[in-house]
Image (spheres, rainbow, N blue to C red):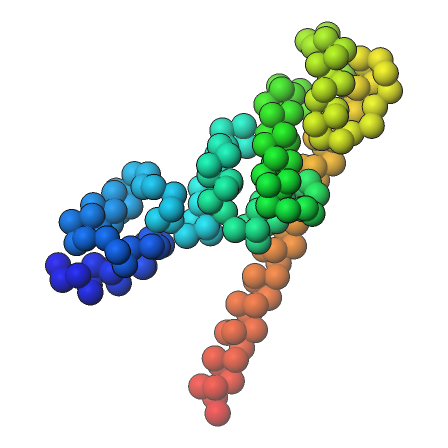
Length: 195
């Protein structure tokens, strides 16, 4: 395969920063990408890294992966996770990592709509952790909570529910917007063909 063809293939696979690579190195990157194997993050488009991150649990994210994302991608990830998007890049990364740590800590617990079930769930979360640990978790996600363990556990469960709801609402809005854009494009094509 010629170098020019190889570069076109690399670009179609979302590989970037390949102009200074030798042909053998570029072939290696393309082959690994085609097989679905991981390649160095510096050679991937931020959008592809974002897609990879959204396909695995938040607590498996690493600072290196988040650092490879652009600010816009970090904002999108924050919207998807239902947390605030403001701040500098490092603040966004730290907020996402803190959120992931808290989600890992409370992943076995969920917000229940039934009051009796919710009390049991909050009590079991309160029993699992010490008060200072729950307080640290609340501080990480900037969640105000009363000073007792049950109140902190309830606040964390409510935070998780609200974040999930905001994230799902954002994803649904984006899907709707994408559908509308596709419909408009299709209508324009039909109008051009009809003219």
